[in-house]
Amino acid sequence: MTIYHLARVADWDAAAASGEYRVSTLDRTLDEVGFIHASRADQVAATAERFYRDLAGDLVVLEIDEHGLDVREEDGGAGEVYPHVYGPIPVASVTRVVPAWFEDDGGFVTE
Image (cartoon, rainbow, N blue to C red):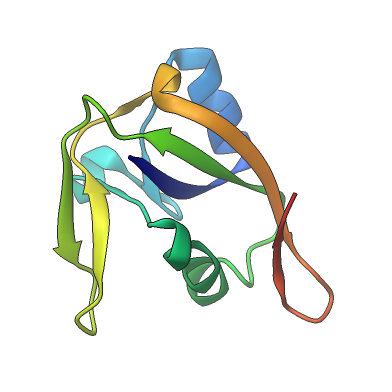
């Protein structure tokens, strides 16, 4: 099954160089939070609009094959369940990197 994670381009580039992704969320690492936030396909746009709208810089959506990862479905607040990855995400588990951005009207767009 595929899960998704919003990332800054610079964070993804650093992961690609090191071999694993370790950013939990904006400006917080896996070591600080204990897991990496992720979304299901139908949650990506809402997550982007809620947490990333005011972020300067380019974004990507990482499509992640969760096979072999410790993924737990947990309440993300307001009763909605989100996948959380407990441990680093190997670059090899990222099956696709999709450019993403916000339009001038605030709408979230992926390529």
